Length: 541
Image (cartoon, rainbow, N blue to C red):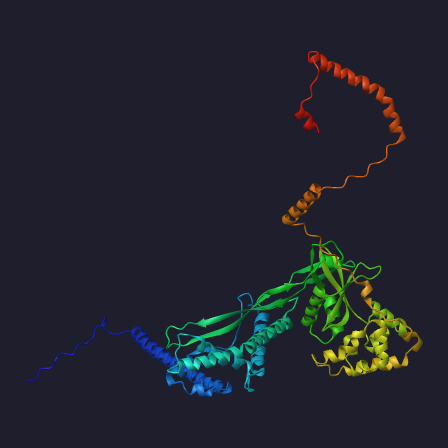
């Protein structure tokens, strides 16, 4: 008779609940996910190393040292591929978290990526590589070979020696590439900044992934960290109306915002004071429309430079200070400024040919033009002079030279290399046609050449510094030496007749007095004769 073991029926306490089952499933899924993530990360790193190895081999070939790469064993090639410079990162500080700043940073990323991949660098071998490859792959190779800790096989000394010699030849190119990137960011920040919404500026830094062992990967990423400062806004009264003004400044790489200031001595005022510069919205609009070929931010940047460096003029019967605005050494007009509440405020911008400038008044007198006429034919903006017709017209050359606007003859040649001036030729043609019709040969040719330099303010010189203590001591010693030095006796004046008469009258009186003194001394001496001591007499002598 066979016996069966009794089947144990789980009680309610021993039955697994649905919650326990789901937890076990989740734990198993979590382990599987971690394994999958580990495998994916391992595959990603392997892919990066293989891609870097291919880039390294290509770079050795472009540098003309492919024979050195063939001396490396596989382990050394892997080791070389684990040391790399990553692409430049563009990031924003926590303060740039508003929607506009996010859009700006995204635009910066796209612009810099395009700049890195489109800009080519010429190697010493005559081959070309992109700026991005130069800053990543080429720099990674040089950096790896500079490290004393990294060995690349039995030919390490030979390989490192040749690559280090090559590195010394690339120093100037390296510095040039670094400066190119900084200049790009400076220009980019100038374009995207606004006095109304904020000035953006980058600071250069690095992010590193440290190497835990020689078998591990090491990487560093150059980072440009962007920040923003909003200029001060103030309301001032102009002609009985409230106007909003903005503090002027522009971004500088790794320095922040450079706020524009003007020293008091440049205004002909007492030395030792500085005035912050502000500009009203009306002046920004006029500046942008009358220059016409640059954005608002670039026009304001050029205005900042002119305020810091430009010549300052004073017009007769005016309290304003006129700052010459020059771009690429071409004089384009005047920034009209006033001192208000310890600030130098730009009220408007006058183009050099307009009625508000001395040059514009001479053009009106020579051609019989009025303000409306100049506006109508396009003579009140830079666009009217960005034409080959204007640059090569002999009558226009005479008019501009006689009126003090000779720089405008070079505007076409200078600005056509920097900006796209297509579609601006027609305005210049209209101006030259009008000039031909209204030409007054006797009036214009008899004019003398003009310059506004006589209106310029001569900056005050700094006060003379106090003499140093050493200099004062030297001067005192010189004075003492002069006092101790023998001096010639002054010439004696002849005795006047009056003095001679007085002396003759006093002589009878003095002789009895001397006898009386001698008598008193004789009595005191006991009626003995008075002896004179030889030593006393010698001393007296």
